[in-house]
Amino acid sequence: MRITNNMLVSNMTYNLNSTLQRLERLQYEMTEGKKFRVPSDDPIGASKSLKFNTDISKVEQYLRNTKDAASWMKETESALKEINSVLHRVNELTVQAANGTNSEDLDKIKEEIKELKGHLIQIGNTTYAGRSIFTGFKTDKPLLDENGNYLVDLKKYDVLDENGNPTGEKKDEIFVYNVGVAERASVNTLGNKIFGSGNKDYTSDVSVGDKAYLFDMFEKLEAALNTNNNDDLQSALTDIKDAMSNVLSVTAEIGAKSNRLDLTKNKIENQIVNLKELLSFNEDVSLPEAYMNLAIAENAYRASLAVGSRIIQPSLMDFLR
Figure (cartoon, rainbow, N blue to C red):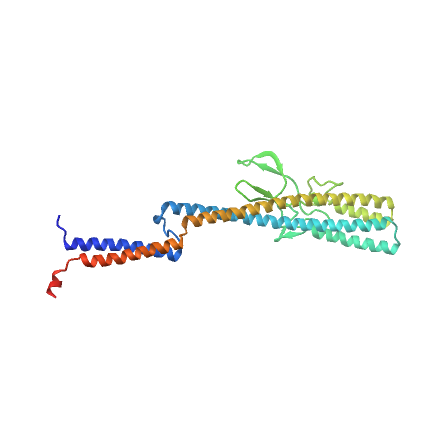
């Protein structure tokens, strides 16, 4: 086969362009620090990067959910501690009254207990990010009115199947956060579990207008202070201690959930770190290696130019000059 000058020029140009293209790709890797910029550069690597980015987005959402749930429970725990402090102070004042005080001191005790009752109502209407924390799903409404009566219904709701039919199961109005692929965390605490209803009942459903037990207890205490009846005051002390015990029990439950969320948060943060390391390994270049490959490609390109200038035969125009 006869090798013409045009064939030499054409092949040389093709090879030079191929070398130059490789040089341009290596330059991009050095500049951006990435192994590929379009899926066609590395289809398998691009597919893995897409999956890693999707997984990172999911896990980061789980982390946001975990932090929001932890903040909600921290606010609830703070409110419960404040309720316990109020009941503790009421207990101290009742003990003072039961031990016998003069009428002036008794009037002061009555006035302080009245203020503590109002403060307890304010705690019951505590909000987190504009949402009431003790009202179940009805976060846009306060829990209690100025007399300690419930302003919302707190009742178990029917669980429905995929066709919208009742399954027979009932659940409390508890928010559940997704904090993992198959991990859930319930965050809010219903007000009736803390303030009660009826006679020391902290489990039954309540309806709008029902009197919260703690405020019924306050009214009985106020009546006992008005009559200065020691037996009634002793009975009030028992009720107060039972209420404090219930609040401590609920606080312990919230604390256990918070500890679990802390462990979940640490696990999720480690997952994010691991996924980002895998993503970096998949698409990030080693800069020393990239610099070396770039230098090799640059030398190859320069050598190609030098060799090409020697193998191209002089044309007729060169002879004419």
